[in-house]
Amino acid sequence: MQRSRLEQVRKGRRALWIPLVAISLFLALIISACQSGAEPEAVAPTAVEPAATEPAPTEEPASEPTATAEPEEEATATPQPEEEATATPQPEEEAAVPDELANGRYIVNLTGGCGCHFNSELGGLAGGNRFAGPFGVVYAANITPDQETGIGSWSVEEIASALQTGARPDGSQLYPIMPYHDFSLLSDRESLNVAAYLLSLAPIANDVPEREVTSDPAPFTPVNDPPAEPATDPVARGEVLVTIARCGMCHTPRNADGSVNMDLFLAGATVQDETSANITPHESTSIGQWSEDEIAHFLVTGMYPGGGRVTGSMAQQIDRRFSNLTEADALAIAAYLKSIPPINHDPYAQ
Ligand code: HEC
Image (cartoon, rainbow, N blue to C red; front, side, top):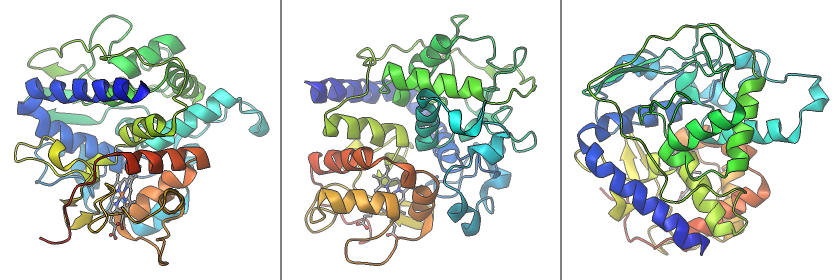
């Protein structure tokens, strides 16, 4: 039941790309840029490295940090970088982080630390990063709890709703560079926890310019209402995690127009100068022979079943994000990867 629900959501998201084809390339590049630079680790907000398959036309926000933003050393340093980056993420005494904040931080880290919003000058999620494309110009919002310039006057419910639907409290619609289509799979509880976590950060005053877009984005209603609680079925949970962690950004190839090639969903892709593996359960071209335990172990440690550790951008993602996965979540991702159709595709063969 849950799987078909999620399937519908995915179909809904797929259908949603159709009207967006013209800008999908730009969005894809931007989203992957954000995603890969995502940890508000002292690094630039939108470092692009493994993201784009074509030269990014939307380089403004991303470009200068692009090339060198993420030296390997930083990558391996700190899996929970929010503290340093945002100054005071732990509102009260160290030991007294309520579960909801810890869970909110966990989800934020998994999605990439809201890195598009990271303002490297101000050292927090104060926004201001500029995203330009044929749609116009938008600026990442200040998502610190500053009353005047940030989201300090929003309730947790309003923030959670913006995450899941892109609707602001005033009814206006966020531009879909903000990946609310993906976040619409998040349960209400987790979205509320993310909101509580954001509100616990130190407020930073930063007045972000108004967007200038050719047309306002259409309202977005998730095909199904987000569930109240996280899915307990591992496969369903795994699909949510793979979606919000955006594994497909690197592991699914793109069509010429930049849209995601769903025929090769998670079957491996060449991303800039790197090839990402096929992670469908195909026996000979992919990880079909790995057990779920082996996949889960790889995700949190980077260690291959046969020994040796992964390098490159996957190692970076593990160090920054996936090493924080709970055992249950790592196993859920493994269960989901085992459940999708095996695709006979060797991305290393070209
Ligand atoms: C920033 C890009 C990027 C993201 C995001 C990413 N990966 Fe990877 N992944 C790679 C690359 C590149 C490789 C290949 C590394 C190599 O061969 O050295 C890889 C390798 C793997 C492998 C090893 C497969 C094999 O046959 O060697 C698995 C499993 C995997 N990724 C799963 C995932 C999952 C699950 C996610 C999301 C939770 C994910 N990856 C997100 C880039 C990425």
